[in-house]
Image (cartoon, rainbow, N blue to C red; front, side, top):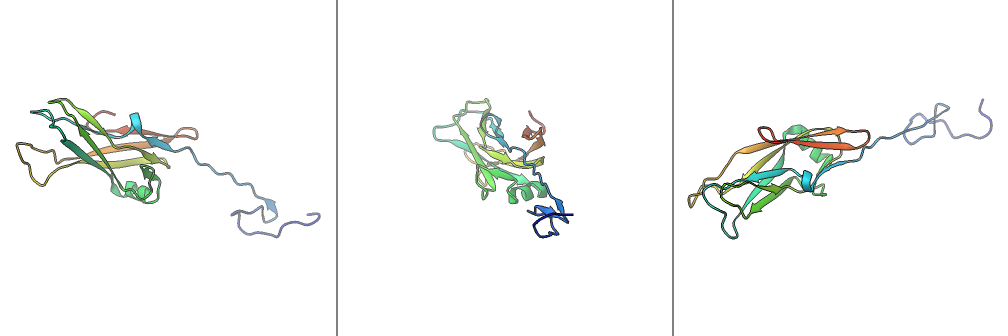
Length: 165
């Protein structure tokens, strides 16, 4: 028997103290987010073959979500580009290329708030047609990010299928 005054009976555990006369204790779990930035950021590598890049010449790249799972996670703000929930693409560029030598272009910060495997497409921003002897790479490259819960901290690992991890 309950002695004294008690809260009214509740039928839902949501934000309640008691449920059918039993005390309710709720725990929540929210692991620390994983962020790819700086040295861990997703990168595109550019190699210009045949000449050095010209003064003021740069090469740009775009990263977008690939597939329903990654697009849905982006829409639910489980993936956040550059700290902005409204951003759906990332841009990167590189300049100062030396003939035949690869140079990386970093896509900036991507935060992951939930575990999962996420896919992204990377393309080079190119003109509609080749000109002045330049032949552009119009391929789409896929980047996979696997996010796992490591005892309360999300850890993200990047894989470049067909390339380095």
